[in-house]
Image 1 (cartoon, one colour):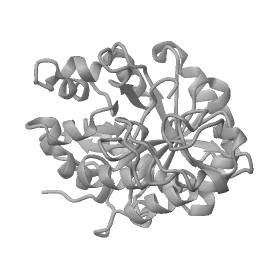
Image 2 (cartoon, one colour; image 1 turned 90 degrees about the horizontal axis):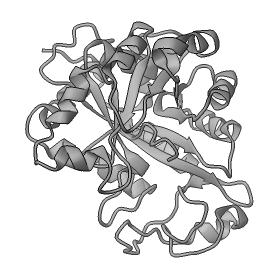
Image 3 (cartoon, rainbow, N blue to C red; image 1 turned 90 degrees about the vertical axis):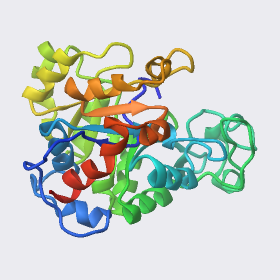
Image 4 (tube, rainbow, N blue to C red; image 1 turned 135 degrees about the vertical axis):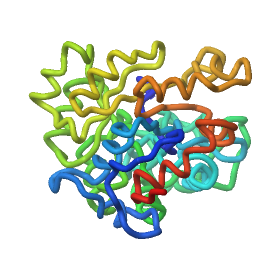
Length: 326
């Protein structure tokens, strides 16, 4: 991911009473239930979920590249299942396109690192790619195969997951949006953008869908956002190096959620620095400082952590997604 964008998510809130959250009925986590949330009729119901978390001081954990783990390769539906069961309900995935126009989940420009095949993605057709085995980050060949985007979206709708869709150079926003519409996954998708032109394109093609975008200097450049983007559908990406509570506060004043990443190169990323002493309290501080969406390479570790981040996520998800309250 080019700016380490926002990813797969699991909610962690702390000991908060979320009396201001929208109510959603039903015990299932499907898109139909989330669509029952109150909110602007012309935007995805996800807008209400993100508003609830921001307004009540919560934080969403987002799992990078679908949340790979030993035996579970990145961008595999089986891995999404594993994350959903063990760590998060929002996953960032990468969307590429084959030579014959099939959208599927793949991060790299070539097949070499993450599959049993080789060669350029854009020069290989789906009949060949669909038979390949996916390889996990330790180099172990699994029995899993690259999934079509439509299959991943159908999975998200069935399971109530949220997929952040990172467009690779081989495909287009128009194609991805069409797939979201076809799957009825408007309440299960967030589109990732990297610059003003991309954000404006998504806003033009799909003004109802959630997106992530880089606001620049949030304290000074909100005019651009207010003039061209709908704050209701915007999550502002604020980088991976230096948390900035002042920027997050300025964005919140404009009803915009902030995202920040602790992921990156192993040994250099904040995920590793925060865990160096075995105490993940820095993550909790991010939430207390006003961050809404946290992109991480260690969603499983955070989900298992004792204390504020690890134990509150299930309660928080119920509070903001379903309106369950004490």
